Image (cartoon, rainbow, N blue to C red; front, top):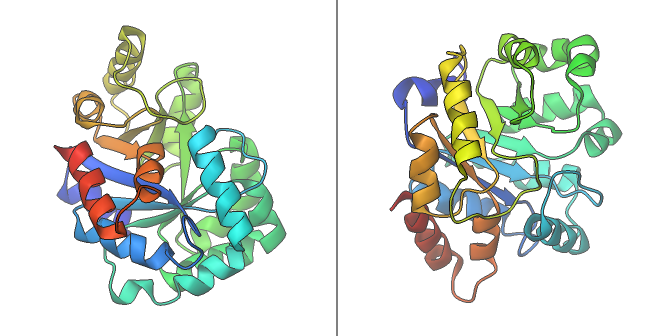
Length: 257
C-alpha cells in the first residue's frame, strides 16, 4: 500500500491537499515550504513543476511559475532539492505539472527519480488517457508511481468509469471548466456535479480542486468528497509580507477553520 492509499485508509474525510510551485517565492524555499505545510497539518502536498506554457493554470499560479523559472527552477534541480526529503517528511508527496518537461527529462528517468526521492504520485493534466494507458502506464507501475487523473463537470460517465479503473490513488475532480483560481462559494450547478459523482460510488477516493480558498468552500466540497486541493490561495499566502512560517500557519488555518 502506497502513502496515498494509506492516507485515505486512515482518514476518510476533510483531507487537505495543498499545491505550491517549486522555486517560488525563492529558488531554495521548496524544502522549507514542504516541511512547514506538514508541520501545520496539511495531509498531502502537490509540488508544482513550473512550465512556461500552462493549459489549466490561472493568473496566480502562472505568475508563480514565471517567477520560479526566472529563479532557475528545473525538473533536475527540483529532484536535487528534495533528495533527502523523506528523512523528515512522512505525508504523501506528488509532483504536478505538464507532460512536456517530463518528456524532455525522459519518462522512465522521471519515474525512477520520483521513486528515488520518495514521490508517491504525479498529476499531468495534459497527458491523454489513452496515451498514458498505451505508452506509459507500465513504466509508472514498474516504479510504483501513481498517476492521478482528472475529471470535470463535462466528463462523460463512461470515461469517468475508465479513469476509475486505471487509478489506484484518488480522482482529481476539477470543480468547473475553467482555469485555477479562488472562489468565495460554489454554484448550485457545481454542487449538483459533486452529488452526481458521489452517487456513482467509484472505487477511488475523490478530491476537488480549482476554487477552494476558504473554510466555507473547503467544508462544502467535503460534504460530497474526501477533501479538497488548494493551490492559488497557498501561492497568494507565500508571497505575502511576513515569515514563511507565519504565512503558512495563517493560510492552513484559513482553510481548515
